[in-house]
Image (cartoon, rainbow, N blue to C red):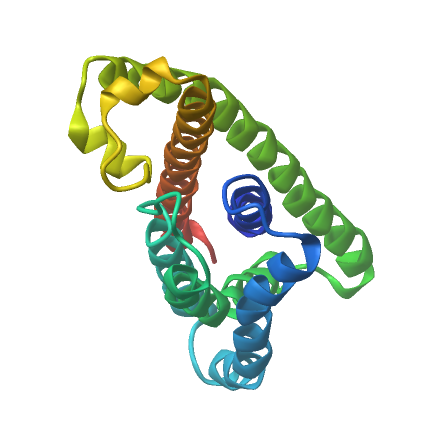
Length: 222
């Protein structure tokens, strides 16, 4: 849960700031979608928790959240608010189901005298999961981005016109533009941003898989 929640909140501003080059206010406006949907879903999540087995709700929450994460692993360097809207809606709708029922499962069997200590341990583990998740995400992003950049550069140098479209080069630009210093700098910037996007997509896919695999743990709970 910590990897999924903290990882998603980390990856979005990383992409929006570096690839889309948005400022803090623009990033906040885009990410507001998740918070608004989560806020709207809170009463429904409470009502569902009172009527259904926490294990079923937990599995549903992780399934929806995993799908929402997977929806973000196909971004391009042109992706922005519109492309991020529905993945955020799905994750926002799932978030309360990823918090309330698992918390009940973790603490519901604990004796009243031990709830305070158990709650502290539960929160610590969630935060620790987030810290480990972000460390893994950074490792994936900053090791894969140079690999993707090298491959894209080689394709551009080989005269691959399709890759120019992929990186968002201006229409009509040819590989011969590599001889122009100004065009070289622009192409390098486009290549770096596209490579960074591909690496971030790998990180989205990774935490989506981790989240979906977590569903397998649900039948083991009491």
